[in-house]
Image 1 (cartoon, rainbow, N blue to C red):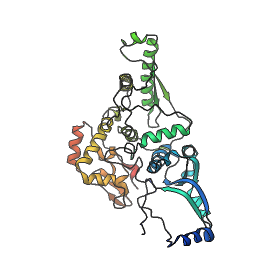
Image 2 (image 1 turned 90 degrees about the vertical axis):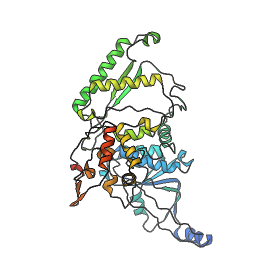
Image 3 (image 1 turned 45 degrees about the vertical axis):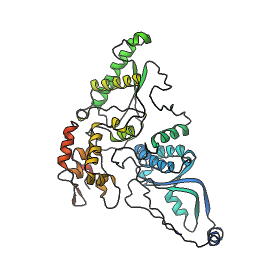
Image 4 (image 1 turned 30 degrees about the vertical axis):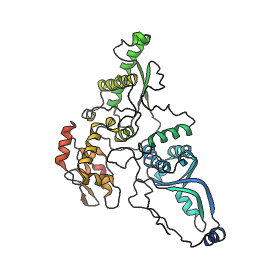
Length: 410
């Protein structure tokens, strides 16, 4: 019996399926003769994971449009996800500025990275045989929208935790304690708590001034009250926490248009795909006005109190959604045609339709606007149920913002 080879999508932005060529043998003797005497291949041992990775120089894309979905593909063949593996990588040159991302790949995989283009050149007149190879990952990237907005495999395959644990172990770090029912299980909190604000290239100068003012105010309060005993400390107005700002001034970032919208959707997708953490969000209608000291202080103190009080695990994904995420998931539930258009990565759907963020849909920007965008001299516009969209914006109290998507005009 001859079984058809499955088609796979080897990259997040590869719209077509890949179906490898095959050679058919009618007996093991014919196969042995071909392999042992005619081609005499060089065997590449152990497990190899093959995928396509654009924008390798951007660590965000490298992790969640490449490494994470490839690892989720490997999880399906347990326990191979626990073993060292090799990465066979097909990528755009990216001007060669990807040494940092490639180092992360090498450490995470354990057996290094091979360049698929170089291997193809070496294959001229020569055969290579993989001991084991896993192909694909193109439907499991962070840019691959799902109707529930989760990272593919994050919950159903426990991908978020397994990815985190392997990253820790490969860097010789102990993974965090596993807690099954409550965040306080085997928890030994140090007082004061420590909090970190991570630098983001989209912070404006005014944003950074406001953030630093919030940090200074919280740290001053902690310094004044740090000698309070635990018993007396419980009577303090605010819990004690020391906040640090982590900056990455030496990492060069590509200049991109700054989003004027709310939730960083990548972080939101990670939060709702990780059932042992809780997410808090900056107010969606306030974010376009810039980051403000008062709101940052409120969020940090609310998070601190949440840690001290504890919470039940697992956290339902819907509880961790920001208001724009709740709008998107409900729209997917109520409008199946719309949902298929933005979640199915197939040749029948335009690339512009799936290369999008929920914020663009909610605010009717780019191809979701009433005017669409110009692509190759033609107008690209995707209809959506604007009546339903307006109803949901009112339901979740989301203001309607419009911006020019000039960066998406070809």
